[in-house]
Amino acid sequence: MKNTTNSFNLKKAVFPFLTALILIIITISCSSSDNGNSLPTAIKFNKLKTDALNSLTQHFQFNTADGYASFTSSKGVQISFSAIALSLNGNPVTGTIDIEYIEIFDGGNMLVTGKHTMGKMPDGNHSLLLSGGEFYINATKNGQQLELQGTITLGIPTNLTDGDNGGNPNMTLWNKTENDSVWVPNENNNPAGANGVELGQGQIATGNGFSIYYAYVGTFGWTNVDCFYNYTGPKTTILASVPNGYTDQNSAIYLHYDGKGNALAKLDTYDTTTGLFTEHYGQIPIGLACHIIFATEDNGHFRYAIKAVTISAGEVYNFTLSETTVGTQEQLTAAINALP
Image 1 (cartoon, rainbow, N blue to C red):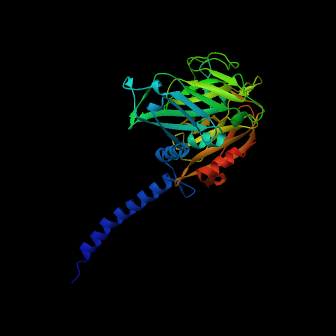
Image 2 (image 1 turned 90 degrees about the vertical axis):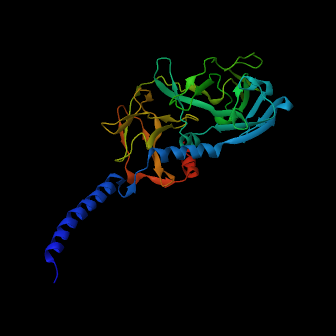
Image 3 (image 1 turned 60 degrees about the vertical axis):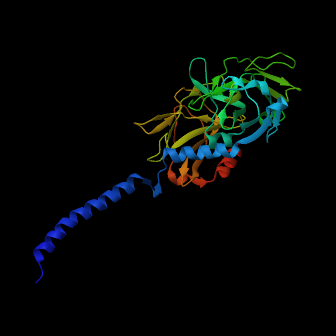
């Protein structure tokens, strides 16, 4: 004879459990998706940028017995320094040295690597820098970090950023550490000098009729040849909204200034209460034709949207997931570099 009482009690026990389990699954599913798309994590978004940097990294080697090293990068930048400028734990270094080098000249590669061109002004506010090139240089021996006692000279063809217009005499050196969100002036900064001027660490010279920037770099890490975008008209602060679940941890908002050269601004402040990105320094020119870009991660690729806008005072620019496209690093780079 069946024990119907035990069967009934078992059903009563199992039914609430199944109901609770279903509710948990629904809750997790709803909280981790927007229109059916899984939300990216900060780790995955940052990995995209790290992978982009790795894809742009060039490697060189030289033997200190040669006394002097000179390399030409894939873009035509001349990298030169003396072996005696390097040391290991304060002592002269000998043998084979490994040089790690990255160069970024265009807005597309700035975006996929997260290396925007926002500089700190004397009053502490941030404003757009026009770039003559962003550079990363480091030296190691058998994996051990070396110190730089002298300078590294970069001979940078100005046509990589200025076309046929020659160099910009306002260019100076800027530095940024890995944790900085903005470029800061090199402590020895001076404007570009004329041919033949004796320069100290951190200065820029121009030669050959402004066809080359000569940058004298005194530290390993990131260096930028830049000057501020000079705009004297009225400026404003703008806002940007992004799809639900996206924040400054797993996405970013950038501004491409149309026709203003190699530069990329960033809306670097995120309000967790309103869910809005902003450039809160009020440095964006009113009436400027530009493209505003939303970028995030999606299953190992970039998800992005690009809007053509003319800046209005206090405007809010909205992004929806349906406006976005999923593409590779190369596709996003090409899309940004195709902008006017």
